[in-house]
Amino acid sequence: MAGLRVGISLGLGLALVPCAALQAAPPTTARAIALPPAPPPLGLPQLQSQVSCPALQSRLRRVLGAESNVWSVSVADGSGRLLADLNGLTPRIPASNQKLVATAIALDQLGPDYSLTTRLWRKPDGSLLLTGEGDPDFNTAQLQRFAKLAMGQGGSSFPAPALVRIQLQEELPQRWWPSGWPGEDRVEAYGAPITRLAVTSNAKAMAVSDPPSRLQQLLAAEIKRQGGQAVITTVGMGPPAANGVLLHEERSIGMHGLLSLANTESHNFTAEVLLRQATGSWDQGTSQLRTQLWLAAQGLPMTGVKVVDGSGLDRGNRLTSRLLVALMLRMAHHPMADHYFASMAIAGERGTLRNYWYDTELQGQFFGKTGTIRGVRSVSGLLNTSEGPRYISMISNGSAAPNSVMGQLLRQTRQGVCP
Picture (cartoon, rainbow, N blue to C red):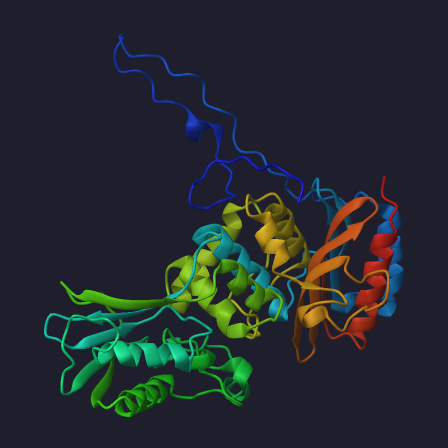
């Protein structure tokens, strides 16, 4: 991803800094040493507001035809030129294109080496505490290792107690699902509750409705299998007990794997956890507000934008195609741009795009994020062309044949020519 690679870390990764904010304070005495002038503010391409390629604009308009009112389409190049834009500022339900927001803020705020950690603590009274951060791949093998440690068989210097007392630290049930997720989705595997301690992402064939109870049963059964007995309870959130001893921790796959789960495979649980961890809060209102503030700090077009969740399953979300294109343009010039775009599905080859545009000129040339819920189809991503990369977002709320239209839009965009 060509672009500026040197920047100033200010906690909001891509946020611009006014020149005045970087100026040295005036000297308080005549003997104060004069500082060199501050550097200019960090400059990254911003999406322009005027369409600069009328030919592409006309071709895309012809593709949409009578359906133009249910589509939003925006296309930009790497320098920030808005090549084409049809209803680009119309807020629409984005479906899983929402994950492009969650993964961008996660990569920016948590970094490429981040992983989610599940920990076992021994409290001063000898009881144990299990804490987690929502590892989507936490599994029974890892649970067995925790049981072994609890029994004092995993290298711990503590003798095995006759009865193991374990507390599971977990969020309150009202925080498990984003409030707008429909009830019919909450029973499906893709709509499983979002908890800090989740065996196989709280999903089997269907969603696990009470994750703490399931975890209690699985852990107690494993301790019993190893010859022990356990009393396991669930407690609310709070810091580990003072003077607690960390006995063991299990880490998730790294950030690249987490991003790929969210973007390539469109895994809702992972996207939700990434957004909560990146914003530093599992409270929905706080997380939503901090996400909106982060987006605004990047200089993105925020008119009509509403962030409700990280996965896009909530129909209260509203994004514009112009915001998504501007976001991808900003991420293309982020120091970790390669991580972001490498996490996406690939047309005809990988993830949710593996069955789209196979054996066509688009195969292997479009890296994108899909989105599908009833009545909504969206695809946004990076399209390679002979004239350089094109950042494109296509959102339909009510199209009769969205997949066919999106293929035509991509082909017309790849065709060029935009001097």
